[in-house]
Length: 279
Image 1 (cartoon, helix red, strand yellow):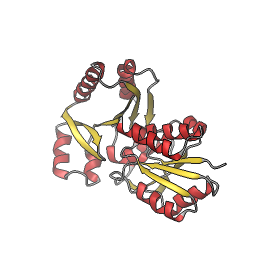
Image 2 (cartoon, one colour; image 1 turned 180 degrees about the vertical axis):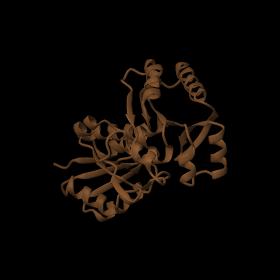
Image 3 (spheres, one colour; image 1 turned 60 degrees about the vertical axis):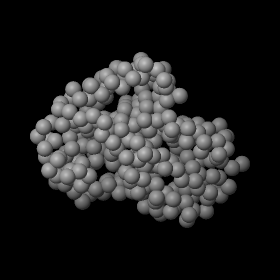
């Protein structure tokens, strides 16, 4: 009997027990720090941040090789099986394109999906897909569910320092220096693959202002919250504060997870993300 296998990449933030229970396969990206290459799946919590803080230059991230994807597709499945491979937005990484190329090489039926998101917003799609696959649902039903989850998700991110974005060439060095001097904090939302600034200000009060506004809007109704995830880079104290303030909005436990090395490379230390899925 054929099965549907669910594959994703290590830009996802997800609990290991969920991965094991649902049979999800994660293909790791890699990151190079001062000439040393690390696989994203071998770094322990907090380890990458320390490596990055001590590095002479900004780490360089790399998508999985096409060959690794092709090999993975063959290894995890039988010839009659189908594979749905769900990945981080193409605007953040070339991973989804590498998966597409691998799908053409593999002797399996591979359907590649661009989640348009990353981190726990990617997790929302992957977990729902894996639940349906485990229950024996059809490929069309799973793809429809992925699209539904995507359309009902939001990703917000708070950046405490623009240093890494400057080093990575994503904003100009001059504006980065000015923002650093002014202690500018930025909150952005990911819309159609792009991070769009929605609030900026001096100091952490900027983050508190956004959080209060989000909670007030959610309490007014309109869309009922089904799930919330919080991810962080650095210490998780503020993430836990956010969890406490957001917990009354949702019946499910809020997952608080460290984001992976790939995302930390771009966000820098003390960044956070609030990922929301609506019913």
